[in-house]
Structure formats: structure tokens, C-alpha cells
Amino acid sequence: MSDKTPDLHAAYALETPDDNRRLYAEWAGDYDTGFATREDYQLHIHTARAFVGAGGQGPVLDVGAGTGLCGDVLVGLGVGPIDATDISAQMLDQAMRKDIYRDAIEADLNEGIPVPRESYSGIVSSGTFTHGHLGPEALLPLLRVARHGAQFALSINAQHYEALGFAEALHKLAQGQIRNLSLPEVRIYGDLAVGPNKDDTALIALFERV
Image (tube, rainbow, N blue to C red; front, top):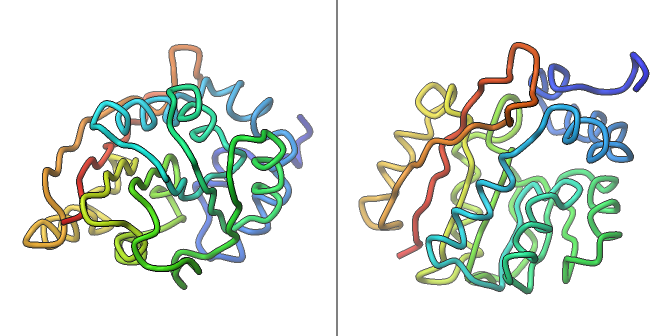
């Protein structure tokens, strides 16, 4: 990889939707073989398995699908159909080449998702609710497109769960909009990871829409 290739630190420094679009447009081509392999990225595997373990089923919306890492695991676990949504058209292009998604939806979650209400029985997201990406305000647009009883599995960077307001937001939602909230903690990277973020963890917010 060249010195100009985006890396984890660049991703963690993102602040705006346009920042996201620029970085992931550059990163899309070698995201899987570069970042995911080099950093022994595991979060998508944990998220998909947690979703299935909680009884999740399709149709599923893969939020912040990127190049389709989480969707690929879900398909291997027998889940489908799956739609992908992401802010990056280039990432979605890579994802659709894997022939695992029914549809691709380019969208900024801060502005909502252009699909009808209650379209999905499952919502998954791996690696999107983290540094510089999306805050808890994006939870409401996801609830809008989820059916009653829909299973959610959303990974949230553990360092930001309380600091960015996710704990408070989920507590409020649990007063009548979601149920059965649990927060298993998992490692984001595997044993082969190196560098300052190798021991980072995420909470996988598992819950159902009421």
C-alpha cells in the first residue's frame, strides 16, 4: 500500500459526510485485501453471528455495508435477502460485485433511508457507529424502516458508547420503542492485529423493535 492509501487513523478522524465519501471512495478498491486483512478485522464476523444467534432473519438491511464484509458472513450463515446501504457509492459498487445483496441504497443516514416504512425484519451494522461516522441520532431512521419485532445487531465502538450518547439514547428507546436490549462486548480486531488500536472493543447492541 502506498503512503497515500487511507488507513485506520484517517477513518477515525472523519468528521463530516463529505469526509466519509472522500475517504471511502479512495479506500474501496483495496479495503478487503488491505485494511481488513492487514488489521485482522473481525467485527463483521462477531456482528453477523450475534444477529443470527439472537434469531435474526431476512429481509435484512446492512447499514454502512461498505464492501460487503458483514453481508458475506450473513449469507454464509443462511440469512437473506439482504440490501446494502452506505454513504459511499464506490464501496457499494465493490459490495455489489460479490453478488450477495438484493439491492444497493446510497444514503446518508443523517438524512434518512429512501425506502418504505417497515421494510425489514432485521437491521445489522458493523463498524459504522464509531469514530467520526454516525451518532445515536441515526437510530430513529433505522427504526422507521424496521418491522415490528425486527431484530437489530449494531456494533458501537466501546469507547464512544457513553461519550457520544448511545447509552442515553438506547435507554430512552427502551422505554417503549425497543425491547430485550443486550450489549455483548467483542474485540474489533483479531490476534494478528498490530498498532495502537489492536485491542479496541465494540459493544454489539442487540434489541428488537417493539
